[in-house]
Length: 220
Image (tube, rainbow, N blue to C red; front, side, top):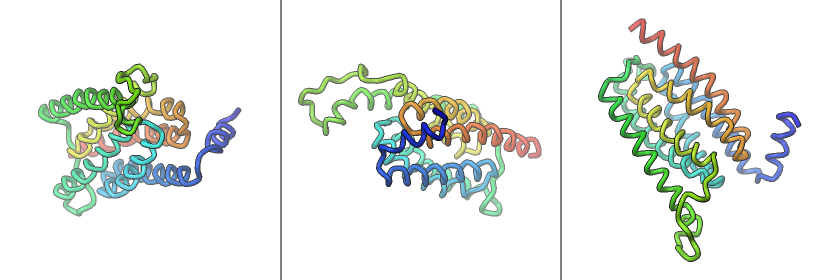
């Protein structure tokens, strides 16, 4: 079965509105990465559209870590939008820099705090899925598969990447590249082929973005 047949079979059981929402979210997500490569402040409004849609989509498909990261993305997009607007002479483009020691410390704290927080969310997932009732519920991580564990790690990596991007640090691309690449098989496994394809494109775009920002850094 080729990719197109697999995609058709996979989405045949999905409701039309979910397919439309995922398609729109993917398009705006790609636009956001494109604007990020160009150091263009439109990375944030386009990204907000994508992340808000993915909050709902990830909730439907049970990827709590990705749902939470998209909530964080939305908040950080507003924060980044404000920061970029303050450091842009033409109100569109910004100059980039390397992460400071303080940025790495904050990034490290965000990473480990995210591991703990998302891990706890999955720990209490049976309770959440049971409409916040403990009747017949057993808490723990016994219900997780490899995709869920991967989701916890990539969520933490994305947190740092988003923070570094808001701070205009070139190292943000390294986190995007690693996490995007891991998300490709994870999303395919979860039945989100369009999103898996999006992450594959994201990986390529993140590599391009890193070298584009590096050129700007050298010129500066």
